[in-house]
Length: 432
Image (cartoon, rainbow, N blue to C red; front, side, top):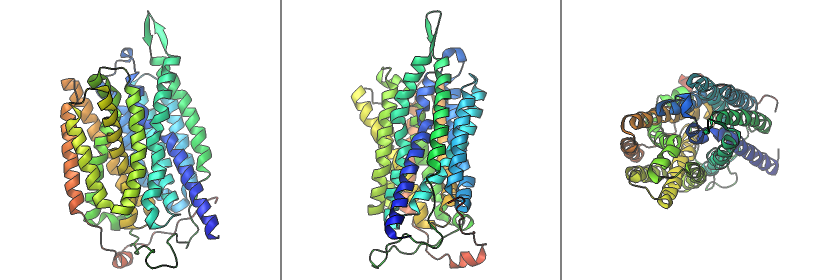
C-alpha cells in the first residue's frame, strides 16, 4: 500500500470509530431515562443508579476479553457482536418495568455490547497513525462517545414524552421509557452493525512512525504483554488514577438530572446532560492534543486538580447559568480521561497488545463508576442531597493528582520480559 492510501484508510477507520461511539454513548443518557421512571414502578434512587452503574462495570470488564479478541482477530467482528448485544439488551429492557429486567438487559447485556464495540474502535484507529498523533486520534474517536448525549438526551426526553400515557389525570411515563428503549435499541443495533464493517487494522509488519527524519521519529517503546504490564508498579498507579478520575465524573453524569433539579429548582435537567456531553466531547479532543504536546503526567495533574476544585464547590452552585458552565467543565475534565489513558497505555506499554492492555487499564473506569455512582445514590437516599458524595469524589481526585506527579514511565527495556514470557501471536485480521 502507498502512504496516501494508508492515510485514507486510517481516517476512514477513525471516522467509523467516531460513528460507533456516537451510538454507544447511550449510557450517558441514563440520567434522563432514570429520571422518567414513574413512581408507580417503585424504584428507589439507589435502584435507579443500579442498571447504569452495572452497565459501566460490565462495559469495563468486557474490555479485557474484547481487547484480546480484537488484537487477535481484528476489530470488525468484535464491534459487530457489540452492536448486536447493545441493541438486544435495550430491547429486553423495554419489555419490563422491573429493576431486575433493566439490570439484565441494560446493565449486563448492553454493558457487554458497549465494551465489545468500544474496545474495537480506538485501538484500530490509533494503530494507523504515528506516536506523535496518538493522543489526538484517540481523542477524536472517543469524542463520539462523549458527544452522544447531545442528541440522545433531548431525543430520549422527546420520545418519552411522546409515548407516555395518562392514567387518572396523571402522566405515566412508563410506556414512554419502554418504547424509547425499544426504538433506540433497534436503531443502534443496525448503526453499529454497519459501521463495524469499516474497521480494520494495518497489515502485518507495517509501521506508522514517521520516516526520513530522526528528529521526527518517536523513541521505540517496549511492546509488553499484559502480564509484563501488570508486573510494573506504573500499571497499578495508572489504574488507581483512572478509577478515581473516571469514577468522579461518572458519579455526576449518572445523577446529573437529579442534581440539577435539586440545586437549580428547574425541570430542565436534560439540558445540563446535553451540555455536559458537549464538554465531554471537547475535553477528549483537547486533552488528546495537550497530551501529545505537554506530556501525559502534566495533563493528568491539571485535569485532576481542576475537577477536584469543581466538585468541592459544586454543592454551592445554584443558579441556572453557573450550573451550565460547571456542567460543561466537569464534562470536559471527565472526558479528558478517555483520551489521556489510552494514549498513556500505548506510550508506556506499546502498540502490539494495545487492545488487551488498555482493556485491563479500563477496568478501573468501570470500578470507579460502580463505586462512586452507587455511593452518590446511597448518600442521597440517606440525606436527601449529594454534598458528601462531592467531597468524597473531590478527595479521590486530589489523591490521583499526587499519584500523577509521582509516577514515571516504565523503562523501555522489555527484552528480558520477552525472553521470560510467551510471545503473543501477531494480530490476524479476519475478512479484511
